[in-house]
Amino acid sequence: MLKIQNFSLQLRATDGRLLPVLENISLEVPAGRCLGIAGESGSGKSVLAMNIAGLFPEAVVSARSGQIEFAGQVLTGADEATWQKFRGRRIGFIFQEPMTAMNPLMTLYEQISETVYAHEPKSARELVDAKVRQALLRAGFSDPDRFLHSYPHQLSGGMRQRAMIAMALVMEPDLIIADEPTTAIDAELQVQLLAELRAQIENEGRTMLFISHDLGVIRAVSDHLAVFYCGCLVENGATSQILASPAHPYTADLVSALPRLIAERKLPVAIPGSLPAPDRKPSGCVYSDRCRFVQEKCRKIRPHSELLPDGRRVACFYPLKS
Image 1 (cartoon, one colour):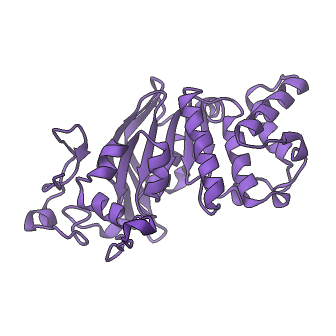
Image 2: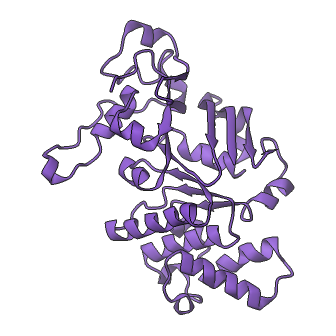
Image 3: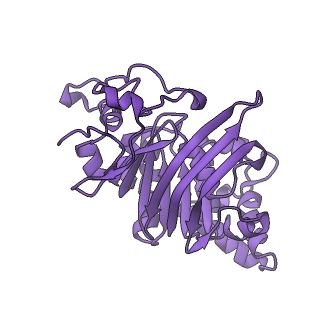
């Protein structure tokens, strides 16, 4: 359903510096599956997602290479008219901050129905009403009619997040891009939202790209996992396999930083240091400045993604053994 081949993106800063934000990203997401993308803030997760949906501002792009293919059609370099045929109808996007993504002057009904009218302008009002109510039910609104005429500020944070999901689902898209959809909501609602998104994959056969810095959340919803660091893909494979036995030192450090149950008597272990700026990446492995297992070779040469015997791909000269 989604195929990304050697995709790189370079931006130009206001002071003229060139920022290599994404480097040679190659990923595939089969139909009816969920790919989780994990990594610290600033790893390039959302930038990739916005490029997949044609939402990234062209004014800041200095160079772009590689391609993004969706359902057999290459979308890299497509014009806005082509993107408008896909966004909303075949590609749904759940943004991470609903209060800023929603229009404060439009009711919940107006915001969701706007997507329907954009793609089916001659739709009868009754059909649009039915689609809006169905989308809200799928997003977990047990009584949609009660909130149809509410404005964003009249909804709780959890309701606004559900509204974003409804907006993404109303046209029943083939691909759903969920960018940190459970950020800043309580744990109980998080479980409900993840169950709904997982149901969209298993029961409706939709394909999903699920972005989060929280490996616990990704484990609950994704089949495959791609780990990003500093704009590079450092490890990808089956989610259960990677989380049970990380091969890249960065993935292992992310797993160690994951909060555990009190019964396990393990405190999260913080990763020392911080993510380098895009124009200050190490010349060798991008994680070499923070890696516990760094060797001289790592500091000099950038490792390529290699296929391991167990089927995952890892960009590391000395992958960890299970």
